[in-house]
Length: 355
Image (cartoon, rainbow, N blue to C red; front, top):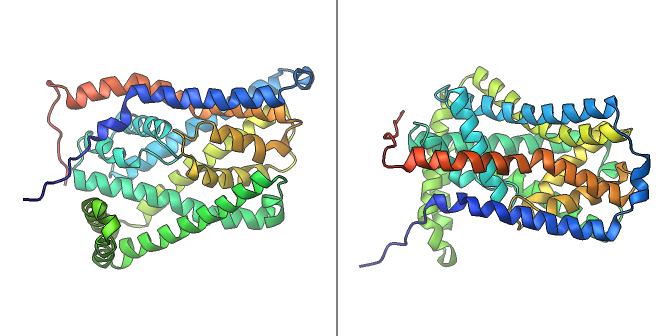
């Protein structure tokens, strides 16, 4: 009798001990960059004023806007089955998992568990997470060419240095991969979900892909469930889901705009915003948890021309990560133990199922 492969617990991805790795990696990379490029004299002319305080406050508010957009969207996708407290908990858990797993888009596989444990059926939770991923990718697919038209292709990619030019190639490759993903998923969600599942299963019957055959089958089933959800959705649903997606991602990018504005003048806000979108696509290839180290390096290289020196660029990268990344590690470290106790403890209530 053929032995079934042992299923790994999704809880393995959310160990609190994993939070130390991105911190150590980030500190190591930043430490090396500061040792190489730091110049104390550059910081002598930087002063803290009310102007600085205002834009630092705006950076924090943009982070709130990012999370608010996520919370609104997941409530819309769940049909308001999640209240505001549950939506906040799911988003914080999701962001924490993304922060401790490789690449900037980690945590999606565990997100189904987070949503399910809030009382939503597994099938519907899968549909919610898949739609979330779909909307995120649509934002990139639409905004990338739009911003290129506004700021110009030459300005967007005119960055010196062989390493940075290599990152540009990665960004373009990442964009076309995202485009292919959206086109294929759109076909499955809106045209022929069962046909796409059949194709996925055919592909994963190839010898070296067979180990993921069952997971591929579950993905195909998720596509069918998501398709059924979408067929019941009206224009109001898409308007709310789309606008909340725009709010969350745009707020994410405006954090860096606000931080740089706090200390320096920026002549082209659109260019700075557009480069962050490209930078985020670059971070998809990061092998480190939450893009630690890699994110700071890309920020200092790709956005460095908006700052007076390499040392200042590194300092701004640190400040950017302190506001946009590390808080999720600390919030998650506080929420995760309570969530595990509530969801998997002996006294936890049985999960409700909403079909």
